[in-house]
Image (cartoon, rainbow, N blue to C red; front, side):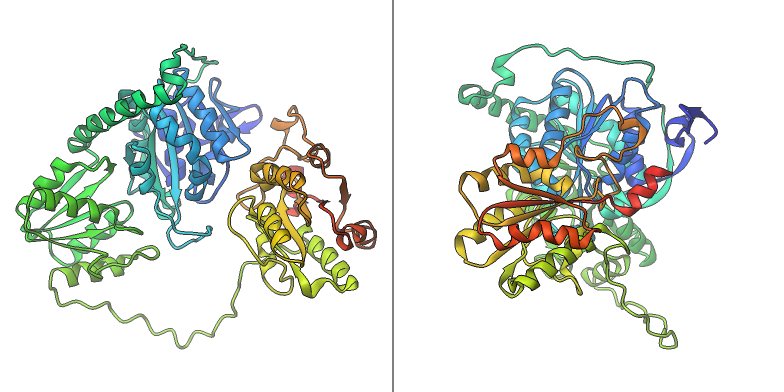
Length: 571
């Protein structure tokens, strides 16, 4: 950490030499792998468990001439930025949490048709158990839906190496490659032996070669490109069959098929249950397209196979199809047989118990240690920080509604951010939530469907992400509600990433233009717009009272910086 550049200590991720060993998060390992692979352009919208990838690239670009990174306004925009760079022959990357790929899916589906020139990696970070998410969707199905190759690392070491390989695979197939992680891979920390960094010694520009018959998918072009995509998938299946990322361990008439972080749990269970000489483990890292030949060979001499995978029975279904098509008589166990659940993350003990049950071993989990002597700790639910401006915003709105007698009949659509914690006592001002930006669209729906008072809440970053078009819709269709934009100067929930409206900003962003929220709202046609400082409660109440007792579309911009972000910038 003793190398200096621009007054900052350089990160060991870029100073480490080949064969050096670093203790890295899975997300940090992805960054190192991308830099070894010659990444030139990256774009992202932050979302846990992927956020550290963008955060780190944002920090590192100041030390690496020729690397460009941006925090885009949403995942679809980030996908489009990275795709255009790849179409120009540069290696690019975008990263997002699993639900972020829903936002980018419109671009993804057609991008699969037109493909890329430079290698492009799309990191999708799934979140089993909903640690920081509103659902547990399994994004392996996006690989099947789009017809794109997918790689799945099981450790930070594989995350580093697979990312570098993903660029090579992408250029070979001229397709973007999905790199799917889960929370336990993204946030695991392990020793990673690194390879050689690419050279970053100056700006590198690509060149876009015009070819409307490829890059402009009108129906006549799309029909041809779809055929090409299917041919590429046949080529990818051959590559998957021979891929060194699909690994076999052990030998025997019984087997386990596994992928992702569960590979580690299975290998531990096999060793601890003394099954190494009795069964064969196939650990898949190249999971789409399914390596049908390899799966066939794996099944041929098996009596029984257990499939261990978190979330949906994705591989289990593929294995059953292979067995049926090849007329292989083998008993396939997994989620459909009740050996493992479709819910939540797996634990090592859970996997060990499933392996023992599947293969008829007499095993039960050891009794947990006796902790009866430990005093019961009080619950510590997540809560807004002491002094958080969102607390004050909620308080101001609530007091005015109480004074107007409107609180009992008010509906509070909310959105994705720290302020979602307004759900909890004593605030209790969050009634309905679907996804990023839904506070605006659902408020429009409530205004049509009910006569109740509607006050919806959205953060500054979320507003730029998915609120602009919804507010334009509300203006055009004359919907009736009050929208509160909670402007705390940053994307606070995911680690203080920048937003276009912020005034308080770190030095590297001082030259960026500022987009004023109030001016944007007025430009969309909202006639009733006010800004308040929520800490000046009585003054704020007087300003917002006419809007909250009116019957027209109105917007309140509540401006006060996140206290943690303010302290961080001042440091």
